[in-house]
Amino acid sequence: MKFRIKHFIALTAMVAGFGSFCFAQPPCSICDGKGTVKEMCTTCTNGKGAVYCTTCNYTGSVSQTCYSCSGRGSISKTVNKKCYNCAGQRYFKTEKRNPCSCRGGKRPVTQNGQTVYVNCNRCYGKGYLPSYVNEPCSVCGGSGYYGTETKSENCSSCSGSGRVSKTCSRCNGRGVYSCPTCSGYGYKTKTCTRCNGRGYIY
Image (tube, rainbow, N blue to C red):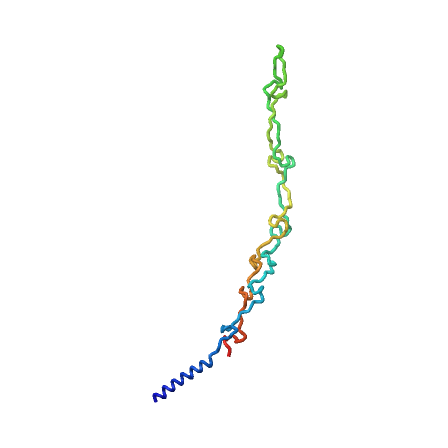
């Protein structure tokens, strides 16, 4: 009886081992047992994971209408107008006459025992010593401006072009952006067609 039990146990173990050997499945040679394979992404350029940005034409910046001048390239500006009287000089040089200490432009000298009057050597016979002072313009009061006027000048924001450039919001100025199909990896993962995703073949 003991012999029969031992024989039955040994035979059962042999059958179990033989069965596991016969029914073990080799891994798929295409996916190496993973059940998935990688293939190059056809959406991005050469499978590099990036797509050229068509919004900015690969430049990283886009052109838009200038907000400061509404695309006109120029702005109207009210400025002070130069005084017509002094032409913006603010002051006029005015002669001030200070009396000379001579006698009406003459001074006495003695010649041959007689007193004669000759032109003063300080004022040269004028009777006064001139000096010059700056007097403010009577029209503008010395400001140099009188009234205002409207002028048109180039817009400083766009330098007169009416357009300004800003960083492309789609690619953040890089000219390319991450491929939406492969999320920037450059490849896609799909189910292995040989093993149907099982990782092994019968």
